[in-house]
Image (cartoon, rainbow over all chains, first blue to last red; front, side):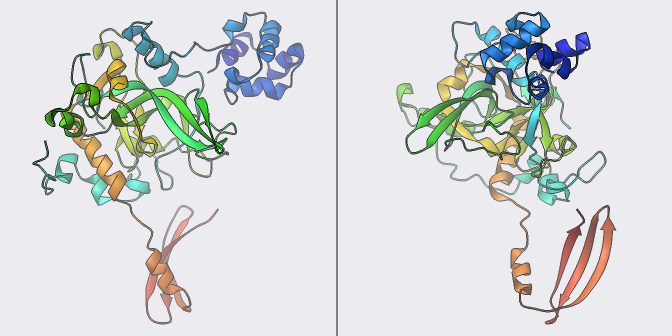
Length: 140
Length: 248
């Protein structure tokens, strides 16, 4: 859930109500609240107007600043902690193409590749390689 | 489905790099300017939505590099990583390239099919490593048990997406490495890599092509499941083909 959505839910506010106060389109508020449009991607003025309409600081609407890999000014543990929070637990989920290639797969269904039986996929990993000799084992 | 204890292992900062290492990395994707993988229906601004906040570097001739900051899994075989040491090459001259797969978190995505419809049930198959393009990574209740200097926070259910393989510097992996995979689960990774690059349940195009120009003289419904119906078609030369029809 985005920070904007959390504020709206906490105060029981509708997109339309906030849009009227901020003089923006309700659609804009909805897109930002759902995360469909990341709040980092809109004009600063838009964020300011929403913050003003909600009487909160601009920072209250923004997600935590994402640390970039390799920032050695931050200790390794803090860097990785921030990365896990920001990357693995983002404010909103977005659509992503499933790696499953087949049709509907649900609880109890046959779960072979593509939703169909797949003898290779069903083989235990250690059996998968059992008959394969090492390739070019002399290479160091 | 495997649990965290069967999948992950601790790695110390001084440990050698290895296949299965998980690290926070900058991953590059080259593309035509504004190109929208995996399809504009998913993201009208050209990001891969699960890949957070890409930086974009412009190239000549309407090309660009999108750089995503995310966790990724090293898939280069450990023997390949070590090979240059055995070849007596200076550490300054090691080939820097390690192949990594981006890690997609369940909390970051809502899985969809190619037509944009909901596919959250895919997680059942992903957990069983049924798709060829993913390696399941189970949730971790407290990451600090694997990496003591990291805050006691959970790690969500996720998968390494083999469709997004790219290369990174081995020094980058060493700088921001979180943990690794157990030897037992490395075998599962290797199996998934072998399947991804070699195995597909290919459509039988040659059978369909052989039917072109023939007259269908028989169509026998075999069985129906949900909105799907399997039908055996017989051609005028006696050949037959079973097809699956789906009502939309």
